[in-house]
Length: 580
Ligand SMILES: Cc1cc2nc3c(=O)[nH]c(=O)nc-3n(C[C@H](O)[C@H](O)[C@H](O)COP(=O)(O)OP(=O)(O)OC[C@H]3O[C@@H](n4cnc5c(N)ncnc54)[C@H](O)[C@@H]3O)c2cc1C
Image (cartoon, protein in one colour):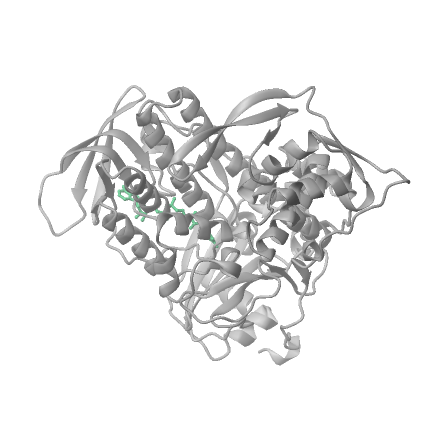
């Protein structure tokens, strides 16, 4: 082993994605990944969000993942919130059947995968190797050698079957992508914060030949998230024959139950009529696993020559299925940060601050959103005190209007959602979810107003990093009351138009003009929809004032905005009594 530019601890999604992007955008970098396991190895956390598909595509690995024939995740079906009827959240409202393997384009831009992590993580790690990273499997990082806030080297050794002495590896930069153990984070004495009272444990196993609740086209399905009175079950098909089924419970409930995980797991699966019917003829693999899954965020994301990336930096409750998204988005941004730091086009401290702040903000926003999901779940009939406590500790009272404002404390303008949203969910989706989670059906001001005035006078002008393909761009941005407005995505399209127009029909015409001749009809419609949502979020965040003039017409809202979340139509639930 030799001297490296970047040494990465851990070959999970964060480590392999970071290594892959480093090599893709600067093939002269010497990058090493140290992974204690030999892949393939099982790992919990299999349900993705569509934002990962963009990262996989940019990394050049989407087609390989598609060829692995993982189920296409077209959305999720829930028993959750203020109704115990099933409802759906659809990434693609009208998924059209098409042959697989498909290309990354059209409707597949908006879908995700449900991945068997043994297979998925290996494809990613092999891809990093193909891009030129040195990958050392079955090689454990035993010790982080430090001098103050600087890492001086990593002491690494083969895991077994080899009596070589540990060696010291040195690099210019070190990345902790070791996941939950947080090897470097702990070595550097970085504390973690738990900004929520949500403390759950997870119990899971894998099943062969469980039925799918629903099949959508070739290989498409939705994951199931089923509330019980005291917790919830995930049901995630990972291949045509293998399914991950897990149970999440509050740690306190688990302790008080006096039951063993096996007993709780069996009881839960037989209690939910739909899950019980889907596994009636299935075989369990029989490797029950448990873990605590408490949300946390590291107090620091980086030091003199080191960075935290992925789950070592923070974790948000699995209800959002966001772990891989957080890990792979961070890995992409970190790779580009390191490359730009070497390039010297931007001040180093600004690049580092942007990376650190962005991760901290994103993880905290996800934790807040998870609190919102739990606090609003009326299906937790045995956990009323638990949900009340979460709501109270989070500062979230269950009055719908307050809850909405609380959710938007950090602002609804968000780059990960293409302009506006929360935790990667678009603003329109979050509005629709609001109806099912806390029974609040707010009106859209873009449907009820026709004059929109930009209000940037009292905002502070700042410069924010936007991560493009292999580069960081400094982009005009504003800050006010802890909220941010970066002129990128839909906001980047809308703000220049709002600087010259106030009438809604002219604003939308101005937006449309930017697409003259560019993009398919579907793409233009999709982008227009993003702009409507973004305008609504600009109003909600106080960047734009909306008014109504009786002399001017209103505009019609795009229908698609209302089709993303709705009551389930295609799953027939078995009668409870029929299940033994
Ligand atoms: C119950 C539960 C359910 C979840 N559900 C989902 C979900 O549905 N969707 C989702 O996106 N996410 C989910 N997650 C989260 C997801 O699993 C993680 O966020 C994701 O794996 C993080 O990726 P990572 O690369 O940061 O860490 P990991 O995937 O954990 O990878 C870290 C790697 O580092 C290696 N390593 C550790 N220590 C050392 C060492 N000393 N030396 C060398 N190598 C080392 C490990 O072997 C491992 O391969 C869930 C998590 C839990 C607990």
